[in-house]
Length: 88
Image 1 (cartoon, one colour):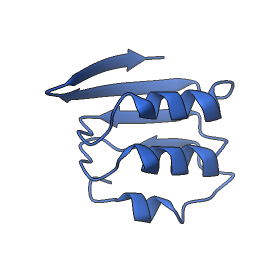
Image 2 (tube, helix red, strand yellow):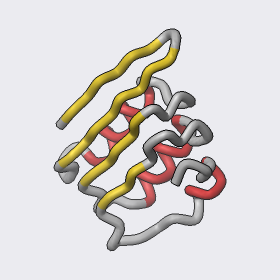
Image 3 (cartoon, helix red, strand yellow):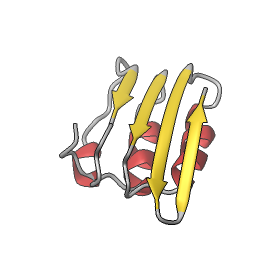
Image 4 (tube, one colour):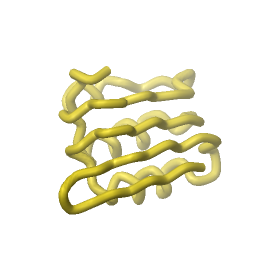
């Protein structure tokens, strides 16, 4: 899913979506993460590796929407201003 954009995430609404993996997607931004986690409240696993357009704000969005249900969270964002290794 490395070509998916924020606009593409708008239409994803599913009670059955349990896992997302956006490794190496440089097009998704924090607003896209907010959209996907607020529209898919049954997500259990999220992988965001080398998604260089994301900031630490995406972690806040994930926590606000999925804190009680999330089982696996793997984030590694590295750019010139930010390195966030996070494992749950």
